[in-house]
Length: 212
Image 1 (tube, one colour):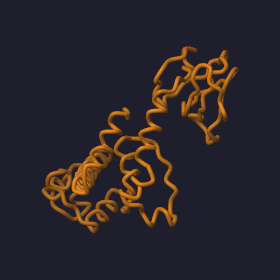
Image 2 (cartoon, one colour):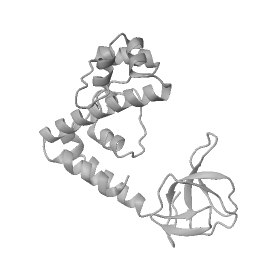
Image 3 (cartoon, one colour):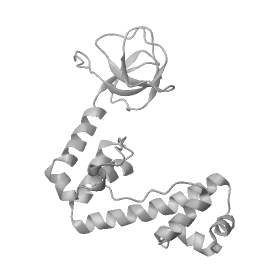
């Protein structure tokens, strides 16, 4: 997701509590509606078929698939999840996690913990500088000079997460932090002589010394 998009989302949330309420409601309505439609399409089901599985009529499914009209209750969502044979997660999250979600920014979820149960509100995250740090980190990552394994050429502003096949003449000091596309090995550093297909996670610019 471009840095400007991340900054725009954060700026919108900073306007007011009412703006944040509207953002959450809009995101929730669209996500649920589009997920119902996309999952139904993946199964190759018609609205009528899903309606039969859930025990509703076709018009009800049509409304649920519309962000403007669908207002599913938790009970309805549980029925839909059962009919589609998918899991359902309903939980409160900090705004920083929502920002990562809507801007497709990778995020590690710690799972059940005191922190995940006692969710920090917007003002608390603002006081901790969470959103400024997110913008700063995004800007830094998008400005990295990384190594293009496929062509053996250095290029600016590479998209992190893109996959490359390592070239044998990887030059120094152009290091990158990568993780294998296949297998479960941890994130690692690769340099001269590296072979295999990897995903770029981080890079060092010309002349920089890596601390890793």
